[in-house]
Length: 136
Image 1 (cartoon, rainbow, N blue to C red):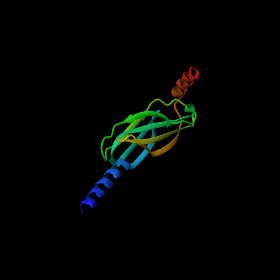
Image 2: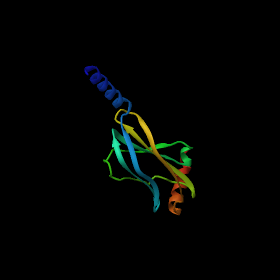
Image 3: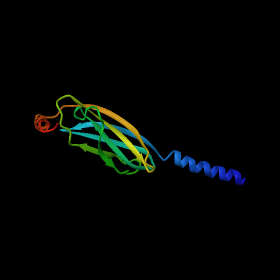
Image 4: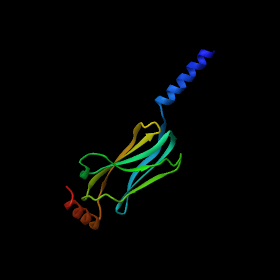
């Protein structure tokens, strides 16, 4: 009986180490609101979450995802919302977002990905063109 108790305790400790947490998403969406892109998500389960990371890929990032936000956990059933006001693109450019979770033990896992085609207004296109002239 003592041996089973020690083995059970050992397995429980190893299980906690091997599986730091779990996240179950209710939804993950990317939508346009005026000139901005809005990313929303909600979790039905948030075990062991240290933070969420939102990453974005645009033609300017040359196919690479770039970290744009770190979000602290809010709690199960509470919606998350990130308004991306820093996307300057040409018409019909594709913008893709990835949602990652970082657990308390430092491990990370991709939870979702979604791409959208986005056409900015003329003012936003003009600012994007001016900004692009000064970037290399």
